[in-house]
Length: 20
Image (tube, rainbow, N blue to C red; front, top):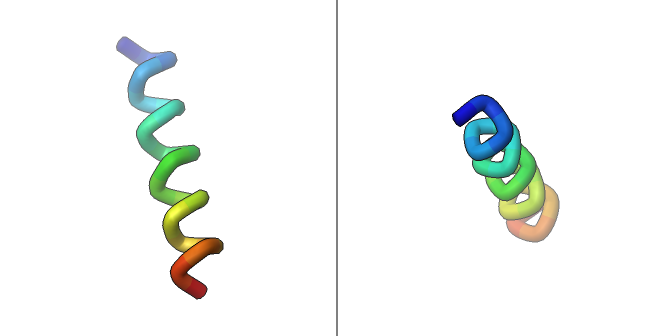
């Protein structure tokens, strides 16, 4: 569960960088 949450955060950051 914790690992999945971390992956979600990383994905969010990735989208933020791509969107920036």
